[in-house]
Length: 462
Image 1 (tube, rainbow, N blue to C red):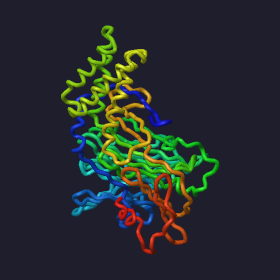
Image 2: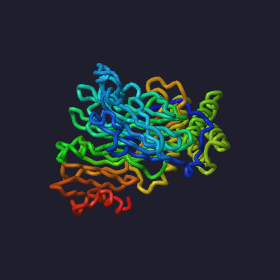
Image 3: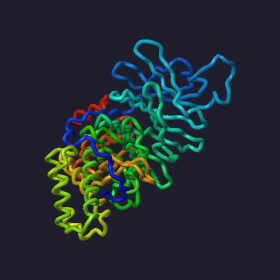
Image 4: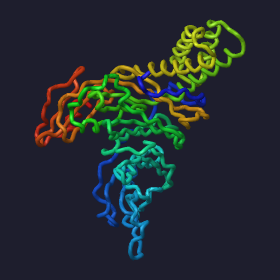
């Protein structure tokens, strides 16, 4: 388990999900927020505060524009109403041919200021995701998410679930690991009296519907180092982390600096195949069923569970099924006389098989993690009454003490497996950088005038 991370034992997941045999044939998309656009529609252009745009494969441009309601949707009536002065957020839909359309993002025409909008377009489902900060007069913001398909909006989600002081735009990566499931991975930093805290939240959509709850994980809890007496690096580095594409279609990599300890960490989050979750749930349910009917020896119980799992034809690939059935047998033999009730033993077996399956899949990764834990996502955090099929494995990959760097334009880039980190900053109009090296860092170097950090990163094979 990852120290300090939440673990929730949820109810049985629905059976019949895709198995481990399809792992290497999954399809997905990973996109980052688009850069600012420079060509908004003419109406009210001077009042627009921030913009973001993306394109679909057929050339439709989507652009997010924040501003006064009357500027975004001008009317022929003279003057301005109180409602018309309210800040709002709109999306322009601009096809390659034909007239552009401007659509109001529902619920944004209120007192809060919509700032730093970002768009992500998922081609597989023709869905536009809109993420923005709804900032109050006290400077605190809710990080909100909505989705639009066929110009119909979904249900707005508060990713943060509470107002926070967020200065830099959140980072976003979208993954799609099956025809049924899309995950938006969101990371952001929030200012607190005690310092900067970095958060990560996977937002799951299953059959196009929000899973009902998204965990909000404080990444600093991954750091096992004691609090530092002082934090010599500049505060800018603690706001520079985020989420980026991982090594496969189910994973993302997280890189962030923890100002409590003065360390920079990389981590991996990936959603486990639904077939593995269904298989582990079946093991739990069968164990409780046969173990609760009449008294059996630990060996009889272990053999029964292993035989049942070995005969399942649909859940996982035959090789993985045999491995997990053996793991289940060994676990029951070892723990049947130790764990008090059959229900507790079933829950522990389920968790053990999820961890064993995740470890088996982890052989795909070049850089081995330092420690891992499971985070489960169901419809309701407080009262779990429905099956949960979404389980994430979150692993700490590497951690290093922060080196001395400058404080202007600090960026953190991590390789797809989290093993390599590039720190850059600007100093006297020169871009300086350090690369991670073993448990430390290289000496500071400079990029030639006119050089490009992205080209440097690509030259490293990243």
